[in-house]
Every structure is written in C-alpha cells, then in structure tokens.
Length: 484
View (cartoon, rainbow, N blue to C red):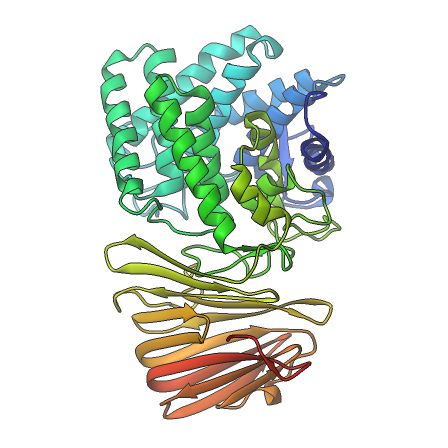
C-alpha cells in the first residue's frame, strides 16, 4: 500500500473505510447497509465482498489476511455447480439468492457475468498475493476459475461485442488454460482475444460505446491484458486498446463540468459528481478529490457498491497517455466529436466551455424505451450551484446529430425528455422554449402536441408525432448563444 501514489492511496483508503463499515463478521461478507445486524432480512454481496477481500490483502494490516481468507471461503461456497445449466459456474449475487429453476431468468434469477467479475478477482489475488492467503485456498480458487470458464464455454452466450465481459473473459480464459493446466483452451482463448481486437479496430471503438460505468470495467479488462497477458501479443493489444480508449474518453470530457459528454450506450446517471462510476474511480487515482468526476462520499452515495472496485484499479495502476491526460486536468477548448461506432451508428458531440451535449446516429434502427440505459441525446451544463442535465427518455428509432449549431433529431413518433436543474418547474418549459437555470433551450419541432409535467425535482416533457426537431442553446445569464 505504501507504493501507491497520493491520489490512489486516498481513494483506496476511502474504499476500505466503506468496506470496513459494511463488513459483517457473522456473514463473512459485505452487507447492503452499515447496520445490517439490526435488519430483519439482511442482504449480503458476493462480488463486492471479493473485491473487498483483495483490498484487505493489499492493505495487509493486523487481521486483514484472516478476514480476507474468511471472505474467500464464503465466496467460493456461492458458486453454482450445475453442469448443462445456464448458471453453471457463476456465483450467487447474494447468499440469499434463490436456486435457479426451470423459470430462471438470466440477469434476474442469476447473473452469468459474476463468472467474470468474481473469477478475475480470484485470478488477481492468485497473481499478486498467493503468499498472503492460506495455501489450502489456492486449489479451490483455481478450481472455481476453471468451473467459471467451463460454464461460460458451455453456455456459449457471449460475443466479442459484449465489451466489458468479453475483455475480462479474454483474460480469464487464458489464465484458466495455463494455471489450470487446460492446454486445449490456449488456442481458443487467444482466438477470442483476436476477435475482440478485430472488432475494436474497425473504428478504434468498442461497440458497447461510452459508458462511465462500463468503460471503467473495460479499462480493467484491458489492464489485465496489459499487465498479466500471457503472450507479448496479448500485452501489446491490451496496451494499444487501453490508450485508444483513454484518448476517446478524453475527447468527450469537460474538466470544467467534471463530466463525460453523451451519447451513452449504457449509463447509470447524468452527472458523474452525483454517483460512483468506475471511470470516475480510475480518474480519481490521477486527480485530486476536488478535480475528479466523483461524489463527495458523504452518505448516502448513489451506486456506492462500485467503490469496492478500487483495489483492482490501484493494483493494476492507471496509465493514461500524456496527451489525453491534459484534457482530464484542464479544459482544452471547444471542439466537435464525431466517431463511427459500428454499422450505421455514429456518436456525435459538442464540447463547449460550460455546456456539453451529444447525439447518436443509429440509422433509425434503435430507439429508447422507458428505463433504458441507452441515452441517445444528452445535455449537461453548469447551472447555478449544480450540473443541469437533459436526457432523452423515450423515442422511436432515432438519428440525433450534435454539432456546434445544436442537436438535430430525426424520428417518427413521440419523443420525451427529462430535465434536471435547481428549482425547476414545469411552467419553465413551453413547446418552443425551455427557460432553465443558466440555460435556455430553443426548440423547433413539427410536433402535434406538447406537455410538460412536474415529476418531483424533475420536469418531463413530451413532443408527440414529430419527424424533425432542432434544439439550440443560449446562456440565460447573458442571453448569449452557447453554440456558434
């Protein structure tokens, strides 16, 4: 731990403080509340506990090794062993998770991705700290990794385009082949790595594009390749894709707003200062707390479970190209972003000094459903005392183009947006103009009707029956157009 940089050490200690608070010696796992013993039906977390165990081995203070070993023994007991079943080799999300049955639904009854999340954590422990765990734990940990990979192979559910899981799997498969003495797995594992790389090199982008959370997991997978790759080729591919990812992310980042602009393929929030994103955690290791895109960690903290990912990050170390690092430290000037992703999809964004916005061209093949993590149109700006944001929440298949003029939307049907800004009211939004704190949005649309509804601290607006819409942006404070 003493070898960590100042920033890495600070976020690592924050992660461990939260882990210590959530630790239950009775369960041998982290709980979902710091007061789990007083809850009638406590819930405990398997994946996050494995991450915390790694952190304990890194911290290595009095009692940490024993606690880590206790956690690992409990985690290993949570693995399913049902050959031929879709959940074979994965781990329970919680010890209280029901046994899957005939009506089991992947992602609900069980999560197959826990094979990769828990499996890679076990692999890092075996690579970094085999001398800090009881030696009788090593064989069952290797066996658990073997079972996780076998289950994944047999289920055959993954494709190289499922980026964050595909990258972790590309490493874990190779690890199991060599450490688990499965030579028949070496060639297909390396072939999988090449398939992931070939897909990436089509546009120097992953098809699972721009997610503040999942990009952070992608960076973890690439760092595994870069540091622990079993061949020079694997290590080279990991380093190359990692550097390209950081440069792409830097092009969308605004250091003034401490946010990455959309569009987002998958996102859990619209303001990185309000929830824990894994990319934000990576950046915290190279930026001080008051410059990093993270919340203050004063409870409650949204998506706090990802904070326990930190031990994996600080062990692998953050390697950002120097040209990209400039954008994470200081705003580098207004610019346009236009990046092909795959097929007909193109991500577009405008990065201004105090305003960022993005739109995705989908070839009118992809829409947005209520509750979707896909955010095809996004806007963020510096409102008084907070980040204001606008998110497209529902639409039919869409093309959205963001440039210095604004956002042009083409879609046939109804489109809905959610607006968040301090003290916002439904009366602030009309069909032609939204008068928001710090920003005026002018809208030209061939809509048949318009509604604006207060929804708690948000305003939800809907335009029905559109084919075209144009959004332009003006600073409310000085009546100054924010797009040239």
